[in-house]
Image (cartoon, rainbow, N blue to C red; front, top):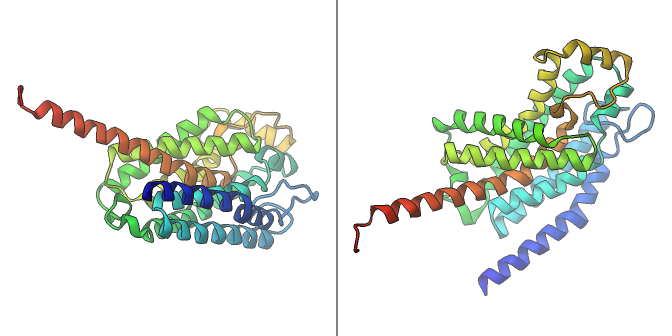
Length: 289
């Protein structure tokens, strides 16, 4: 009976996140528009940076508050997931990166996206720490572990695996595609991070995946062999699908995908580790026991 009630509560909270809180968060981020009045804007790029920052702050507050409530009632992992559902609405109302660069064909646009990604990644890590810390069902879970020597390993694993997953999945910059690619990044990043460093804190894994929002634009600006061609596209304003996969994903897309994907990846990693323990226990039993 208790399990049935938990499933019902999960559906109720997911529905509220998707149908009530999420649309409100989406209206907050949609307040900032492009210079031409189009919806192609982000937190720092658009007609008003102040409006963008306030809108994103409101969306993060709504997602964090609802995630905290969900964590108290159900679990920290599901709290992260419902926060991600709210942020998906917020991300869906921000602009497409290709359209933004075409409207503002300057190499500094990539730098602005990287700065925005860093700010949002820091905010996401803080929200993840609060949500997991407030989950009274999980006071002694790995979410609550203090920072240890495994932190750097988990951070790097989440960043690398998340980046590879998103690079493979982000075939275009349509919102459904980019948020899904970020979800893949979150799931794969969390899986590898928790397999390699199973005692790492949950917020560290979230931060590692979200740092892809910084790495993508920076790599496109400084590390790619085809930078000169990309710069020509930037200055001419003719992108035509030539952006690297990691750049196609807008900063808030990364955050939303990480919050939804990381709990799934942690569950996958937990299942794999439990299976290993069971197999080790079975092999350690003396024959005939």
